[in-house]
Image (cartoon, rainbow, N blue to C red; front, side):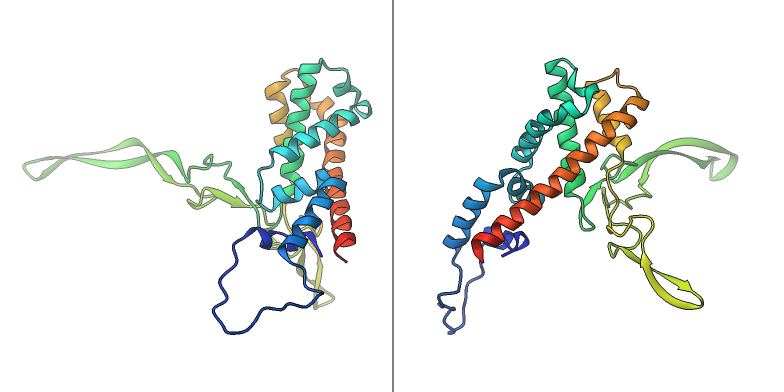
Length: 251
């Protein structure tokens, strides 16, 4: 059994209105069996299981982020610039890094993010020039341009308030190209075959500077970014461990 099959057990099933009896074979797993298997997986790989449940929308990401922040604290000896911070500041920095690492891990071609252009409102304020005319007794006396501030539809999200994380390859990870006059498929160079765009480290840096204003850009990219990438890799590794445990207990 795969992790991706678990969300259906958290959704209410539709009633069976036909006269066909449900399968009752000994090989069929019941909901009780699945829930027991999940309890086993949660005890063996708690972080990976919490990360997957949060990514699937079954539970809030707060428990997974808290566990990831605790693990990040254990990894801080690998990043001196964070390791030697004051305890309160280090806890705040690790919380931001854990939150951003989860957001990067949870991204997919089907996920969306708030529009940066309009701030998730769907509209933006813009200044436009309109032509105004002065009429006296129905006769136009004067015509002049007037500057007005109006709200117009956001061009980036087209009023949807969110933007898809899918790459320009539409999540396929491959694009069509011409090689020696023959159409061929090649790996998308923009997303490296992932099908979606990753979280930019500039966004991580902006979040870090809210709690750590003294952080310099050079220090962030040279020392903090490798630490952040390690946390993202650890998230994927923990989910893979939870997948192995689930397959082992349900085989």
